[in-house]
Every structure is written in structure tokens, then in C-alpha cells.
Image (cartoon, rainbow, N blue to C red; front, top):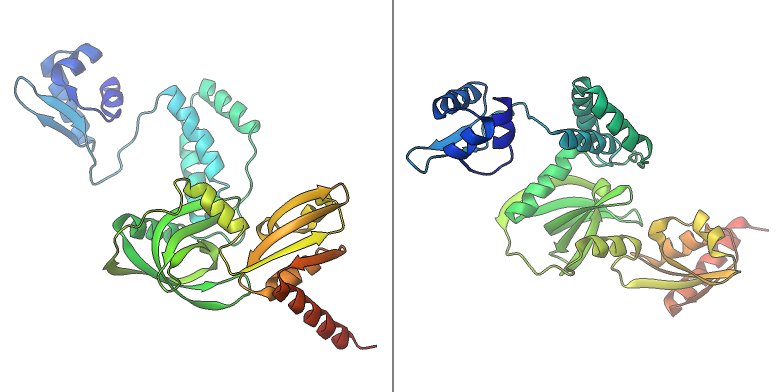
Length: 311
């Protein structure tokens, strides 16, 4: 019966003759074992007649699963990685599932799983990780094409309501992002989930648009590192790229070496204030190469700081 369950959990439709031959049982024994599985909560759908078939379908409850050796090892490794994921509730659920699975894992499989896990590193989740409910609600809204609305705090700590058509959720580094069409700005935007508040899924629906890129992961990664914005600046640091990269957060922009003693940052943000303060905090000499608006703001900000410091 366990072998029968393993075959049914493959997801395909089997004829009665195929199943009987695979498990080495008569048609009568096969029907009896299928009835036993149904009594244990496994929803097996069958059709009668010469071309009769069996298939495991979705039911109301979650029955036990039967895993092959390879599937069990993959599940353990995946759950260990998920337990350090950037989703707080999901990490806790993964940890609980891992405990249950490891309790029944044979020693030979436990050794294989330990070997893979011990040679694999994962970044621990951040303190500002979104909750699993937010992830699930956005995923459901994206699948059903429902509009969403939420309050969003940008890099400059300014908050406002956003009306969005949700499309994809992407994990970049240790943060989750939503790729969506901003209905008010009439353009594609990426939103960090941990900066959202008051999420509501609206009953209204939208017609799917063509995505801005076939590779949504790369698009979101580039947008997170180099945001879509009218504020774009170029700064030349008088220090090696290795030194600047240690003091500059990855989201600040694109940092490239010019030579052994200097590097250039191309950045974007929602305000000139954010750019000016971010590059100043690196703590090395730098030159603002453009645009003129950033040059002028940096000069004004420097004068205000000098006046604030007094003599």
C-alpha cells in the first residue's frame, strides 16, 4: 500500500492495470488498498470501466506524504535554508516542519542531509523581515489580478499611499520586493515589503500588462540597486573601490573602480538629500560630477552644516 501511495503521489494518472503490475497485486487487492488510502484521508479519484484509472487529487486535509530518499534529503536541506529566510513566520514554520521530518529520517539519509547542510551557508533573516501573511496576500492578489493599496515609506522617510497592480515578488539579497505598476505614477516600480503598512487587497481587478523585462529577477535586482527615479547622481570617490564598498550599502547604486585609487558611484534616489547625505557618510574625499542640481544642493548643504557648527 505504501508503494501504491508513492506511485499515486507522482501526480500522474494511472490505469488500474498499470498500478496492479507495478505493485504486484490483483485488481481486487488494488481496489481494496485504494479504499484504505481513502479511509486514511488520501483523496484518490477513480473512473470505472475497461479504461479505468486512478489519480490522487487535492482534498480538504493535508495527509502524510511519502518521500523517496532523494526527496527527503532535498526537503531537509530546503527546510534548513528556509528556516533562515527573510520571512519571519515562514522561517518558524520551516523550522517546525524540519523538526518533524528529522525525527523520522533514517540514519543513512540524516548523514547525507548533514553533509549538504554543513557545507552550505545561508544569510540569516533581517530584523525587518515581512510577515508570511503579507507575502501570501500579495501573491494571491497578483494571481487573481486584484488591485492593492498600502502606505509606503521611501528612502527619504516620506510616507504616502500607493495604488498598485501587483505582478511579482522577488527576494533580492535579504529583502523581499514587489514588482508592480504604480497606478498614480503610471510606471513600473519596486517596493520593499518591510516598508509597507496597511496593506489592503481591493475587489477591483486589472488587465495584465506586459512585464518590463522577461527576466523579472534581474529587473528587480537592478531597480533595487539603481531605483527608477528622476534623481540620478554621479560621484567620484578618491579611494579604492574596496574601501568605499565596505562603507557604502549595496542599495546606494552602482559602484565601479576607475583605477587603483578611485571609484565612481552612479546612484539614484527619491531626493537629492538622500544622495548627498549617503555619499558624505562614506567618510572619504569625493567629487560630485553631476548633475548640476546635485552639485548645487551639496554646496548649499555644506554651507548650512558649516553654519550649524559655528566657529
